[in-house]
Length: 398
Ligand code: PMP
Ligand code: GLU
Image (cartoon, rainbow, N blue to C red; front, side, top):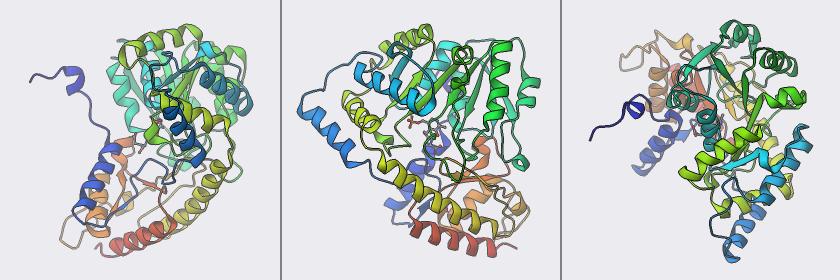
């Protein structure tokens, strides 16, 4: 079968592949700890599940409005006002299947051939492939480990051209865990207004933030900045609802209209049951979010200490999401017990899977070739065991 060049030119999601690989190994009876995982290990809160069941019992199981049910879009507007200090109307909200779909819809509605999308790296694996699918060109602008992977607005300014259509940011960040400062976001926003580009702001990890760090939504700066911003968010990470597949975009009315036109042909609307469950997640009690957040923080602190105590590993501090991204280039050139020389992040991830029985995401997939990404969406027991196994495996390198 001939496959289109559009599809031949993309690579499948490396993060999704890891979870599949670990599941296959577990099925074969191999006990692997999955540090590659990109979803909370907690159960969806019971009251949210009950709302989903009630939607089924009440036969709320038909097509909904393309943009999502009005009550949910109103609830999202309230959330954006109260949590983020930004005013939107329900016509400015498009609810989709996970955050992935509104994100992709926004890129398709904004970008075309000849456009450039600036992307700070390291970045989440799906951004580059989504940008390529719109036929726009991804322009990668590295952030530095020595600066805690902070947003480098000077570097972004240098990368701007008349073709820059979008700057795609993600804070708290996957894979680095960095939380962008209010000051850097204000500088980026001023550039967006002055040079007329759109800030696509992926805030999916907003609730998972630690220490004194605070999430700041760039759209809240002013009405003018809001006009230049599209917010992406969803329920997957905050409410442990990855399987429900529900996310949303908030932005300019005409843009949202265009995204809805696209969605009306692609999927019609997100799952009705997931929409009612998400309404409860957003409007109902929020204590489970705080319980999860506190547990993630405890695990982050533990992991941070363990990783930095390992020779050849250097782990920068991170204030958000549930990932740490240690630099492991100190292991390059070392020999495994069977004589193989570790040369890159894939080799290190491969060795850790073989020898330590832990799955980690190789940094190359995130444009971070000297790093690996470790997810702490695992129980404390597994973290302890995994770190013990990693330390022992690194101790065997020559
Ligand atoms: N953005 C980032 C940065 C993510 O890590 C993820 C996780 N898959 C998503 C968007 C997509 O989230 P969802 O599962 O809701 O599609
Ligand atoms: N976002 C998560 C990750 O980075 C989940 C998998 C995916 O959708 O990429 O691992």
